[in-house]
Length: 394
Ligand code: PHB
Image (spheres, rainbow, N blue to C red):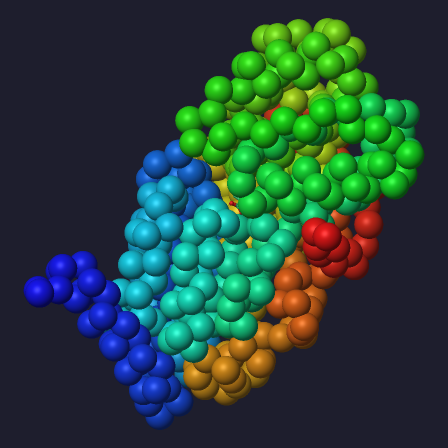
């Protein structure tokens, strides 16, 4: 029987990936180092790709495209943000045909999961800049993550809520990896701190209609609703929250910073005022490093505010450059990965360390309130937990 073309194609790609993995590597010290950057540049999560692309370009512009004698060439691929098969195929092609020595990007959890075995097989570091389900680095020893995890930002918010007069909560999340992480951690930590979760609702990731869920929240009359939806979706949730009169009924909205992401804040505007959220990055973070970053980003990308995805990407490049300096330009996967482990630097978000054991960042998580600042609405940090690592999900 003839092999279906798809299977044949996969088998050939698989063989080419293996060949790439055992190929020369360090012998080509002066050759350009190719980075395969896979993000959604189209589809419902295109804002993630736009932010990542802009941040990587800014980093190259500021730091030059040569490090430790190696010219860095970034090959950008649009995976559309919704199909794990597409992401996996792009990762395979980048490794086998383009001979990239680093994979990076990954806008959503299912897409990072899909690419993980490709990184393992080809022995190339995979820098997850965006996807935030806790378990991701466990899917490949070649994964390092320069973003955050949902448990990491949710746990401090559950504590804050319990200590600030919120006694009953309905949790409302997108029904996939990061949302389920956020729900589980909020339910557990809020109960431990003496609060009560009265209902847990999950909306589909694809084509969600938030209205019926917020109607149910209103009927349950909790002190607050805790929300996680992926970046890009927050405006729709805020609109329904306002239109259905939840705020007017005395229900508070608390959220992970994904809901009030800086890319969306200008379009959410006053509807966000007073909302308390927790995250690792706000464009309003008052450090000199961040002020310079926001100014340069906005100058290079008119009318665009950097969000946490841009910072995950900027720090991903920072990590790669620092690791290459450490290896003297050697880009063999295992060497580069070793050099990355334990790396510490001052990010525009605050101090970070890539934990050598978990390959996730230990970082500051901030509690913020949306306020009017200089004619725009920003998430203004007012409390923080320093050196906070991903607590994981039981
Ligand atoms: C994810 O799919 O892991 C993800 C996407 C967007 C977010 C957070 C997590 O804002």
